[in-house]
Every structure is written in structure tokens, then in C-alpha cells.
Length: 300
Image (cartoon, rainbow, N blue to C red; front, side, top):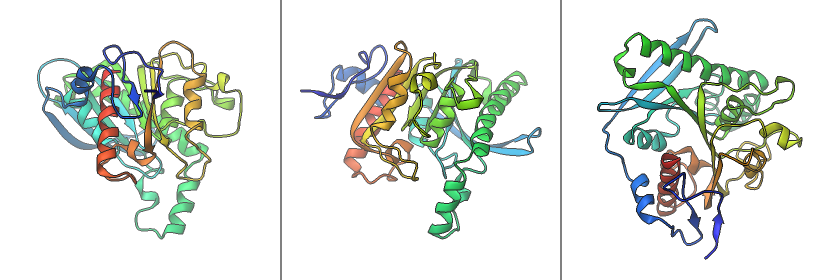
């Protein structure tokens, strides 16, 4: 029995090993992390105003209930998405004791396609893959971290259990561009400018977008623990040339220590958005992929 991909130690340490038959080693550990955790979860929506940029960032927060100090995970949606993206991941992580904060990025969110004919929507989506929106997204994350710290210090009841000294980052698709940039990817003249308050990252459908370059120079500066999750059918959906093979490049060119890769058979691009029934997959295959993605990301 040959695995689809393996760069991960046993689930008890970091993640999960998926086989072509969907069987796994350490099934007990997979079950532990794939099942909902012990915490009830409160979901709350808000919009936070960044006065310095005259910009409002909508957020959806999945907050575990109970005593304790819970690490924070920030989630950045893909192109044309919303704070509703990653709902399966956010609710699951919260049940296991993480405060999951999902951002909505104005200018690269669902406003690009809602109420537009398909041709206009495609043009708007392509236009949003710009340097300006890329930088705005990065600034959104820095602002949200600042706001979390401020609200926690001010005694905001929603964040009194949030451990803002332990922050992780995640994203899907275009949100992985944001994730990679914030954890140290070297981007042309911008260089490498990691957000030092982010301690680990999970990327759903990462890619090495842009022209071929010295990938070791681009991804080598990433020095924090990093989990890449993708699938054998994780193809291009916006016309940027991404392929399932291309999505392995960030992992391949990161430093040897602290990086992990999970590749799932038949996993397509939209299943990793973490919203049920958005992908082309049948419900059974979708649930299998959700199960192992939840297990790996939670254990990591």
C-alpha cells in the first residue's frame, strides 16, 4: 500500500498520512482529531474599522466556550470569498480550543461577483489579483492582530480567553498568498517581511503564483512550522496557471525543518475552502477529505 504523499510524522506529533485506499495508520489518533472537540462554540460576526486606512474589515469569530486561554488562528479567504470561508475548519478548531477569526477582505471579496454577469465577474476577479489588493490584504491581517491585542487588553468579553501571544495563520487559495507573505516569503522588491507575531501557519491550496524564479529564495526564508494541504485535482480556477504540481512548490523549497505536506486523492480546489458542497466532489468523498484535513490541521 503506497501513500499518496508523506512528509508528515505520526499524527500523535504533527499530522496524518493518507493512503490511496483512504486507510490510515494511527486510526485512533485520526479519530481523536477529526471528531469535534470538547468545547461548545459561539459564532459571532463583527466589522472592525481601521481608521488609518479608512477601511472596514468584516470578521467572523468562532470562540470556544469554557475556562482557559485559547490560542488564536486567523483565516484569510480566497479570491471572491467572504468571512464565511473556512467555516468547517473554524468551527472544528474552536471545538478543540482555538479562537478562529475569519476575515473578509474588501476589494477581493464576494463583491467582485455578486450581482454581476459572468463576464464582468471574471474581469473583476482578475483585476483584483493586483499588487494593491495583495498589500491591502497583508495590512488587514496586521490590523486585525493589533485589534485583537487591543480588545483583549481592554477586557472585551469576546476575547478575554484569547491568548494573543500565540497566534497562527491560515488561508485558502488567494488567502495562502497572504499567508505565505506574512510568514516570510521573499517577494521581489518587497523582500521578506514576516509578521513576527505569527507562530505557525496552515495553507489550503498554496501555489507558487507568478513567474518562475529562484523558489529557494522565495520560500526559503519561511522559518516557522508550516502545513501545506492540497489535492491531486487542485487545479487552476482563476486563470493563473496553478496546477496540482505547482501547489507543491512552496513546501518543496521551504527549509527542511518544521514543514509538512498533506496531499489527498481527488481533492479539488473548492473542497479546501472548507464550505460544504462547494466542490465538484460527491458528498462521501468530500466528507473523507474534510475528515482528514480537520485531523491534520488540528493535530498540527
